[in-house]
Image (cartoon, rainbow, N blue to C red; front, side, top):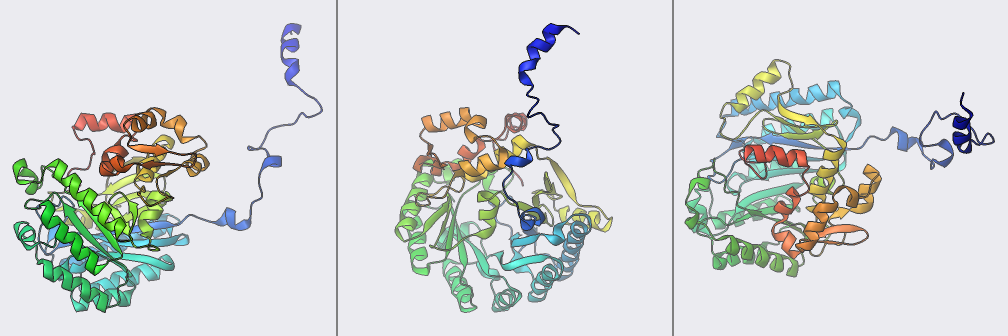
Length: 450
């Protein structure tokens, strides 16, 4: 053997400290660990899609079916239960705490009281629901009867979301909604009388016939009702919807819509609400558990039902069911009856895509009066082992230059300007691979018709 090789490498060997490496990180520098640290499994959030709707809104691109029969809803809920059984049999779901349940749609309050009680009974029997589990149900004012409200309360629903969209009758009539502004107020008060003390009201801005003046009326009514949460949705004017095909001249301008948002922000913060996300506001001390755990804490999500979305067991995937496919419910049920998970599309979550997911939703927890909002830099480092600045240096530099984000030693948060265009900012954290695929299909957000 060439002695020069030995001379060159000898400096690396200290025979007094020499050892075999069979563990990493080295055991002498590992911090203390308890039994609970080893045995603990992170919790999971549950989403259940109920596609039934009393009418089809011309602005909605989510999967729904108009006025399902009681028999069809029974058949559908039976399939949802079987889908849950697949996960219980094949994964560790049974041993994991379910911290939140969200019934979305569609309009879950189209279920009969017996159906709502039945599906929640199934969840309680088969899952490990956390103490005080948050259970949310979406609704429309015209479906909030005394019967369904009483059934939900008895079954454990403790958070109600009411899709009002607007309190002005001319705006509602143009959209062929099934209620007036006054009926929306009455539905809210009826929910209060049944003991719901955690209510969200959805409002939508940039709808035809909306003006800055009548938008102020919406804010005045919110100020009187004082719901625990207010969610503001900018209209998604998608080509596949009927409303999306209308001429642009029928809508408030982009600038007018931004003014509606800023007036709402000023009003709600002035009324004592905390901005918990760019489009969401909550009374102090109130928390939207499912969103916080998904967006702020990077929790896993399991979706059940047609068109539902999951971020679960190392995969990101969707179930059968797209906008404009009326047979999606039947295809979903047929897949379940054939003993298959009704998955339509998905992919493995790579470390990079996990980082992007963390950043995309972390930035969406920013708020003007929320000091703990935005991307938590220390949590990013703990989860992924690298500083966020190393992964997103170009993106952060551009966002700071455009004055869309601010950065401190602890957090990256949206500025006022960034809050206005929060969804556009979030797309800048997409991976190059995802951005290239979106360019190929000609869709910036990749959400149309879903």
